[in-house]
Image 1 (cartoon, one colour):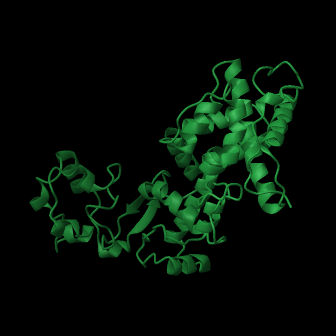
Image 2 (cartoon, rainbow, N blue to C red; image 1 turned 60 degrees about the horizontal axis):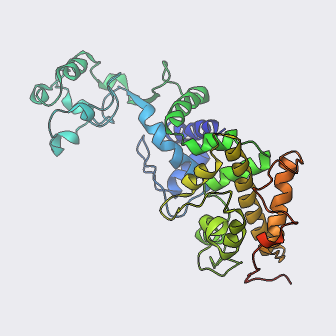
Image 3 (cartoon, rainbow, N blue to C red; image 1 turned 90 degrees about the vertical axis):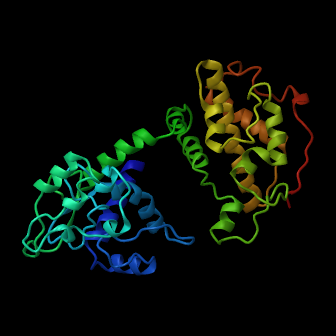
Amino acid sequence: MRDMNIAFMMKNCWSLINEPNKLWVRVIKAKYGCTNEIIPVVTKKSSMSNLWQGICAAWDWFRPNIRWKVGNGRKLGFWIDNWLPGLGAIINHALVFIPPIEMSKCVHEYVSDQGEWEIDHICELVPSNVWQSIISSIIPTDSAGADSVLWGPAADGVFSVLSAFEVSSQISTLDRKPIFKVIWRWKGPERTRAFLWRVAHESLMTNSTRVHRGIALEANCPACNHDNEDTWHVLLHCNFAQQVWSNFLAFVRARDFSNSDIQTWLLHHLSRNHSTNEKRSTIFATTIDCLWHRRNRLVFQNTAISSEQLVVEINARVRVMSGNCGSALEGFIPTMSNPSCFGPVHLSTTSS
């Protein structure tokens, strides 16, 4: 799904170049200062729409896959643009430092008045194979019309969502982090799996995120009044979360994650190599899901439950997921018959 979303965003990137008269293209280019060049300037802004965020994310994958069809050579940077078939930008093959006066030249500036290549003075700056490619390439002429942009992955140079999907799939396969494969294979409710995905992307709507997006004024934690409620805080560092996790220390192995990131933390607890690890991953995923829902009940319903009550809720959900087998997780999660496993209640927010 992510690869397909990127492919459709690449289509929007293509429209920025090849459909400049579309209303939405004109509006967004003006809003984000893309300049009037054929290849627009696409950069992230401190405040931007979801559409522009998507375009910026896809642009890094889209930009290297466009190439030029040489016309009159007046828009093509000789050194920096991808106009030589199969070689990419010539600057990537340079043998020595290229003087700024050369770097700024367009392709047509290397053509003589007689319509021949005039590149003898740079023959020592590039390898012989690049030199030969230039010599054998089509010489730009004014009669050939303006330079135009082509889509590199397609033989005919025409953009298609299918070819963009193939590009994004290849790149994301190399770039995909192991946590997402672990989440995809995690055995549990689809709703919880979707929640784990959001945690991995740190996209939970915490107060810190709400302040960053301009929809809240304070980032304080509603449970302990800590001054910055982010994903780490809600699921691990909050005093309330620590009370809940204290009931699972014998099962969820202790580890210092102060210098780690969210994805490393998830990967450590969700990875499973044998049945015990699978049980632990079930408890871990259920616990952080319950912590988040308890937080939302406190914020939006003004309803606070104690850490003991939440542990009971986790207990019940895990037993349902394990097929109601009372002995399946015996020794791993606390039960009502073992009240000593519950700690004291210390909530800074109480129900009304």
